[in-house]
Image 1 (cartoon, one colour):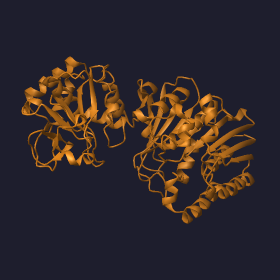
Image 2 (cartoon, one colour; image 1 turned 180 degrees about the vertical axis):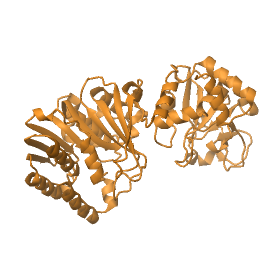
Image 3 (tube, one colour; image 1 turned 45 degrees about the horizontal axis):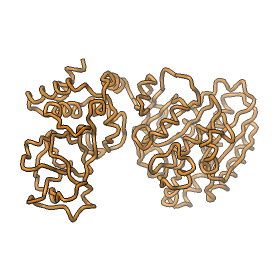
Length: 494
């Protein structure tokens, strides 16, 4: 069955423009991925049921439904399956109907199917917000559309309780699918990993991880080989979630290179409270025991930057929007504009001969007090070994300025109450953020190349007195290498 439907899908893909499919977030699941997703469902208790119901939202050509039916008919004695598919793309509806008819005629199980041509989200938005599902299902399997939408789009407006800012269709689909599950039902989804951290997904995580429990997470180490015949560079994961209040002790996290190598999977059982942690409900995607040890060591610290009256902020000047205020040279009423390029070997060097590294100080929103900061690069390239790259900024090195400015591709750590951070504390912060263990910790938390200030503000940190101790040790050494920071931080992490 699955082979037939894959072939039908490939014929459809050949006739469709990849650009047009990308516009609606349409990416098809490979045969191997579909089979693996179907294999994740726990069907050990299905022998007691005569029938079950399956939901495939955004069904496309029915690849995932076919994979799940094949598994059910080979491993359990269910007599009947009720399939519900949502698909509002008219270009593929006829293929979906043809494929479901093929499944119905070929399967050993009695199949009854329904196709809703409605918008999956809008058609149930009122029910979602009211908390009263129109229909519930035993199993949900999905490859949701990956498409950013505006905060005023009908889909976002229909589900305000899980939206923040401009959302993405994929996590709205995941929210609705969990909503559509019966108690103790299961859903398996393939989706980007971006929801696992960050402020934009907080409402979603609150809903999703309060109403369901993660049982399995599968990661792909190669981000460009997950979807056959597609150009998808988003880092992708597969999850299995149960709609239950049961507190499970562990989450099974597996890893494979791409969507064709599920026979060489690595597996680790991660304590649930380690994988899903804190008030923000960040999901830490641990892949081996070394990474588990990294989390264990850092989680022993019980403060955050915010607890210490410190905060990472994003640089305040968007240079390309303020070109008329930029200057190439210093002068009256002109202050330094610091970029990430000014970070050199752990320190901030200025000037460096870069174009437009000064800005006029006449616009209040573009100036900040000249005081001590830790600068942290906001963006790094995927080829770079480190995500956390920082430099110590000391106001005493620039006594001629009362104010400075920072470009918005640079983050900086400041005090919440605008007090001056003393040198020892800045040096101590550098030790932490320049260490190998904190860089690894952040990579486990966030798979992107952007350093997110909201995340940094919520990760565990040593107390102020420890940070100052670390800073004094670094000042004495006067060596700003990663190796030295590892040695100094290692003394308080034993």
